[in-house]
Image (cartoon, rainbow over all chains, first blue to last red; front, top):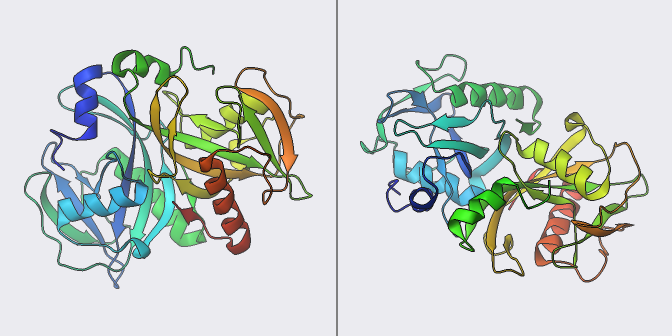
Length: 164
Length: 164
């Protein structure tokens, strides 16, 4: 959903710009040839992966599915989400927004290899998207995306859930 | 840390009893005989696994380490935390506190098999501590504890990270 009206927006009306600890999810869509879908944010022009904050009544998995649908138009079945890492270290996943709001994200990272629909930018949160190998991402990348790619590489090497 | 002075306590001063989406962590400390450490909570008197809400500057893993130490005295290294599950579905992981506060937890759930120290309750957050077979938690226990135990047993049976 757009920021206005979201859980975090309503919280911001009461707490202002102070640091908020917010759960969320990030999704790696992987094609059969191994390419990953990167999206470019409208607000800061940086490349990242589909991601966003949780809403009331949701879960990490619901958040992943909702954000991917909103930002790219594709639909993922919950059974096709594989959790491969969490990304929550304050130094690596605290975002200061242009208006001054500070959000420390506690995210679950998911991999999806099946979905329905063809991805296209929503022109609201996402201006552009491209498929690229995880080892040669577009730049400039958002800092949390850099860490997410490191976790993804470690997961692909080991098959083990990564903790950050 | 005790509730007073915590991130969530400071947030509560601005949002009152409203539903808050809160990152957190829980830990199952498992002995070699398979028994898992449960605590009887100070706030509602029922049994649960050690765990709690994240703090500013922390992470999922730091929250697990801190809560285990505060509630049981056991000291675990972050490197010894084994990721078992994420646990965030609204129906099972929304807690209603005696004072009227409502919090929906988006947690990472870890297993620990190595630690230092002997478990002792702190008398405030935890009133009793007890090792018990995870299939038979001490009574009465919270709905969220029953779900956490299901996730732990599924992980122990399959070795696969669980998503909830």
